[in-house]
Image (cartoon, rainbow, N blue to C red; front, side, top):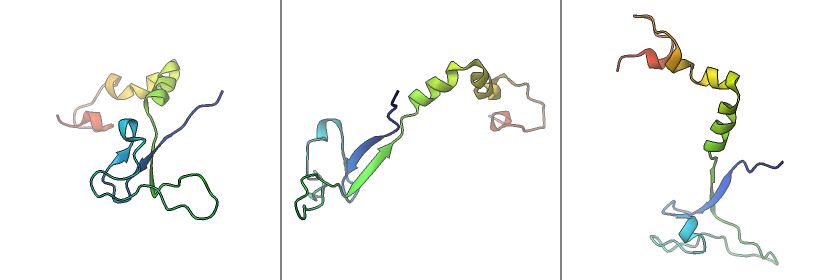
Length: 96
């Protein structure tokens, strides 16, 4: 089974906007007017973006980690452990 690890989004060269969802078909930035794709040279027909933002969705990873009771126990330890006064074992032991 193939799992998609990241989502690629095209960004404006000046980081003014992301070309994502309703703006995915745009080719120029609404703020600065700069093209988001490099000029085509040669015979290449594919568009090459100046900047790409790679987004790694965390939800599927957390779902897989919590599927295993053994891993879930380790991930919830900070809430379930007994704190000793004056001893900081985990940042959750700090003052509120």
